[in-house]
Image 1 (cartoon, rainbow, N blue to C red):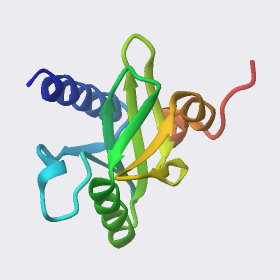
Image 2 (cartoon, rainbow, N blue to C red):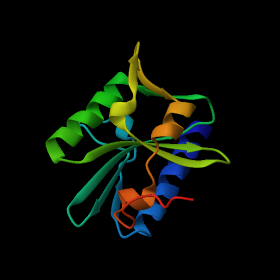
Image 3 (tube, rainbow, N blue to C red):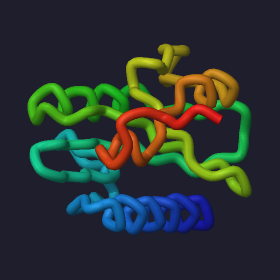
Length: 136
């Protein structure tokens, strides 16, 4: 139950963050066990549709069951949503990675932390609040 609570709390945190950026957000509790394709979070804003598979994990890899991954991809194909993996790393924040960056490994799709960090998208850019990252 602790794993469910950690994941659900992370989803709620991301919902608030997306809502503060002007999105209408829907959370699909139990999305991983639903027979109808459904992402964990669906964020909509002026024609922009973002579908998130959310993970709260401190390890060096994040894994998504093939059935869940393929379900999200099907949802996005039909709806026109952008398929994203939202990885909450405790004490480090969020990484947002396009699902096509994950690689099939046995019964899962996976990405390691280093690859996720290199390919992570900025939430303000995804939200359309910023065109590109500012150079420092």
